[in-house]
Length: 296
Image (cartoon, rainbow, N blue to C red; front, side, top):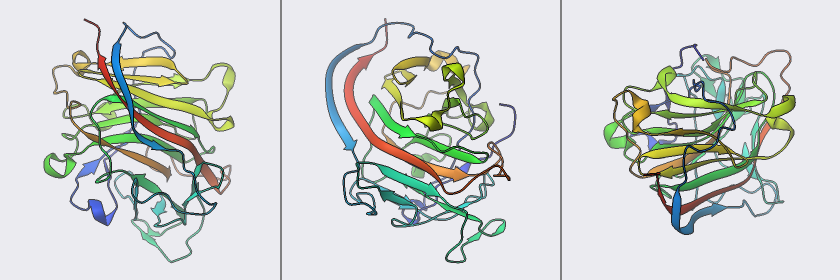
């Protein structure tokens, strides 16, 4: 992608000390579905974070695992206001989290552009769960339509001390509505942030759309490497050699983020073809530790 994208800010009051961050498109010529460049060895595996979103329909997420951010986001010119509680993020009673974007403004929310036009939700595990290395995955069904921007991603836990992009960012999955068959995985760090992030795209075969069904988006993260996959199909692996001499900042704890943005520089705003409400449906989020080592 060639369009400029500005940093996003963390919105929750609990994260008010954190600096700016970005969700931006990946750019790479790596082929989707390319095989891993070499074997990894895993000697131990243990689940460290699991949320299957069990609970009564309409209830909020587990506050011991997630905090909910609130507010708008001027940096990417997104159009939504992220709400608290279960207004836009609620369990469906069947083991799924539903993040809903609506064209509404029930409480006269004010955004950077004036009176907000949309609501949605953004959750993170800062202060509740962090991890260094392992397998990180979410099984999700994304929304559809122009202006939709769902994402599952991670930020370095030291962002409050070093700022973004020095904290590092690992985008496990981003989708923009005008690319219904494609998702992006990206690294951001010092010297390779914003539109200069290092990443690649994965496209479903045969014109399938990600909104049609659930898919599992994952990274396998080891010392000196991050490998992305969709439904077990590896489509890129990044190491310090890909950074053009810039600093690798991915050997430290990161926390998780789930969100559904509406509009912004990259996806563009909703138009007459976009229907609401739209939903990001999350079947599970799972993190396991593993003693993964890159090939010698």
